[in-house]
Image 1 (cartoon, rainbow, N blue to C red):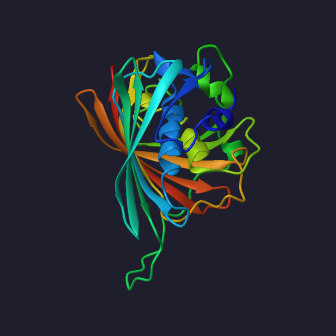
Image 2 (cartoon, rainbow, N blue to C red; image 1 turned 90 degrees about the vertical axis):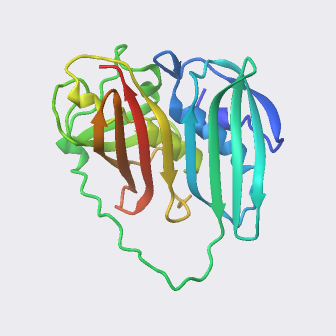
Amino acid sequence: MLFSEILAQITVAAEQTIHLPEGWGQGRALFGGLTAAVAWQHAHHGVATEQHLRSFTVSFVAPVQPGEAQLVRRILRQGNNVTQVAVEILQQQQVVLSALASYGRSRPSAVRVTDTVTAQVPAREHGPSFPKSRLMPEFTHYFDYHLSVGAMPFSGQTLREFGGWMRFCNEPKPITIGLLLGLVDAWPPALLPHLSEPAPASSLTWTIEFPEPLNTQQSGSDWWQYSAYIDYAADGYGHTHAHIWDEQGQLVAISRQTVTVFG
């Protein structure tokens, strides 16, 4: 089942039950980028079309499993300029994911600082692709990667930067926030190259911000650039931020994560 087909199940109803399919595994849970996208899609149905997503924060409370999942949406506040939406995903009557979507309408302002971080990701041919191997997490088979910043996971290289290029193998539809969430979270945590052997790691919280409305003339099958940086890591937790650009080098998102690592 394609990523976009999973999101297409979600309707405008404030409470609904959907089916999360097999095939998108990430260790003992479903792929976090998919579950975050499900939460965003549900939130998005409750917001006026002239307001754009500015920030989306996700707390991965417990492993989400394939099967039935209940979606619950609450509009915390809906104003002329800003709308705040809370979404929860429940399984077996327990919250497994909680998210907050903050939408805002564009308006005139005397404050304008638009010089953005320049994409300096080396070209795709300068880095290896991730193998389509049974040793890789199940969900990664839906993506193409070229690692051109930093080192491979579990290579024992203590670099602070990590990233490269990514795209869906088969998502020809126009890009959406949901598809972009899948692309961004498809990258392993930037801490993993520091390890010399495989060990579990997962996102605890994730906030992603969108400085401009997403250009829907592009598709999920286009190439996108990603570069993450470790701000601090110790005691089994890491704090990272990342920038995401389109193929032309236009900044599309700023991502921040708190990651747990058991190694």
